[in-house]
Length: 47
Figure 1 (cartoon, helix red, strand yellow):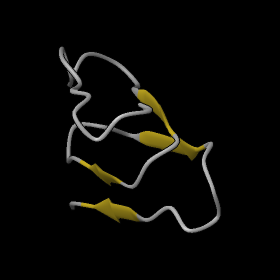
Figure 2 (cartoon, one colour):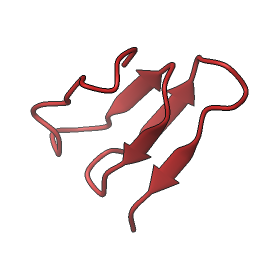
Figure 3 (cartoon, helix red, strand yellow):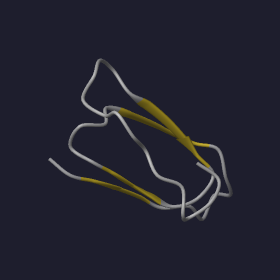
Figure 4 (cartoon, rainbow, N blue to C red):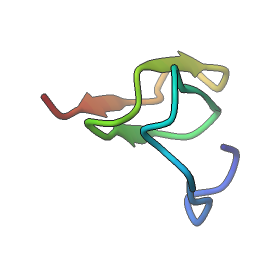
């Protein structure tokens, strides 16, 4: 993910990894997130 308009498709099939350089909300069907952007990026997760 490198643009706020990027979307993820086909979640819930195995272990997912998102690599993002922008702030990101990790949905309940996504398991792993790596931030690759500036230190001011933010992460939110749902349970």
